[in-house]
Image (tube, rainbow, N blue to C red; front, side, top):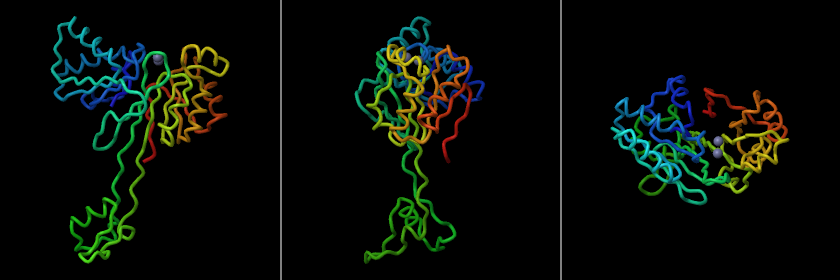
Length: 273
Ligand SMILES: [Zn+2]
Ligand SMILES: [Zn+2]
């Protein structure tokens, strides 16, 4: 999935050797240009590459008209199916449910409609302890153990106890992406305990007034939110161009939440395995 698609997204994707065919879902947080001006270019390139599989876009509703007009003006009929799903809801809502993960969206506080996204791995299976596996255990019995249940005999007594033959499932990882927003405590219950939180940090502390005025956040506010939501790690981004070097933002945030990191173009961040 791709979250937001500003100018230069195609260049970054190609630099990272990410094949466009691998992108199945695009989430657009809001319709300020720095979050979607790269989209029509990307969609056009997918068309030129003869994409076959469908592409799903979740975004504020106005984007559908914008894309339709852009495609109409260039007399382009996309060769692949584009499914557009408008984001209109309040509160936290599940918008996609795949085999391996779910995506939920929730409103942020940014003047125009703006959504944050929460991506959660679906619960994983219990892991069979291969050293203890009896040779005569049936496939169906293995499936039962993997689903987290004891295997019972016909009389109801336990044949294979779950704890004896399995290890608990690996934890399901979660990631929350909070693009442009002012400090907004309403989202804390939605992002509580996520492993990784990306939160915008446009300004340093001395610009707090400007942050409130422009409906953006300071790095300290992002860190406060991360602390209150008890997340694992906090990533900062969306720095104002006034900061040639965003290190002061990191320093301020770290006084509140030590597990804070800056993000840079092209960086790969690995969530705990
Ligand atoms: Zn914005
Ligand atoms: Zn922005």
